[in-house]
Length: 190
Ligand code: 5GP
Image (tube, rainbow, N blue to C red; front, side, top):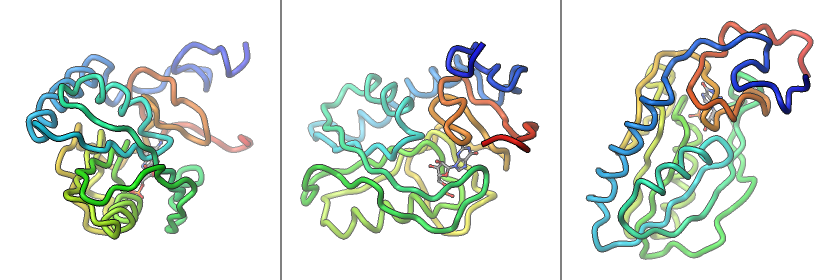
């Protein structure tokens, strides 16, 4: 069996330990949809997906919103394997103007805070009417730059997680739940 068609969670040969179940994610995303819709009544926020980790969360969150919205994406690179490089680069910018718009940055996880802080600084400089962050996951214990997402799905411990869009060197994004990858021995992996 190749990695491409391996059952979810078994790319490493054994299921990865669950940190947040698919059911818990789906319940929380629906709650976030209700809260965020209430905050944007009669507005049409620009949802800025921070690629690539946020793509599954953003797709589910967008379907849980009752408010109208526009979707844009921003690709920022800061991670190589499990360790942050400490640098954030803009790999792909937005395709629209956001001056005067309500912007909601959709992040998979806020870890050191560097990526969210860089996205906020970049987009704030373009004069949006408002700018907020929603993060599926938050690891406050790892923060090096203060960032306070207005909405957070789950606070987690200092564990390297994969699944539901989050990867480890391109793998495990398709897991329907959030799993810990801390036990994986990647020696010899490319
Ligand atoms: P930060 O800039 O806050 O340190 O990290 C933000 C980015 O690092 C996230 O958008 C995500 O892509 C990656 N990242 C941080 N922690 C994790 C983790 O536990 N698992 C995975 N897969 N990516 C992470």
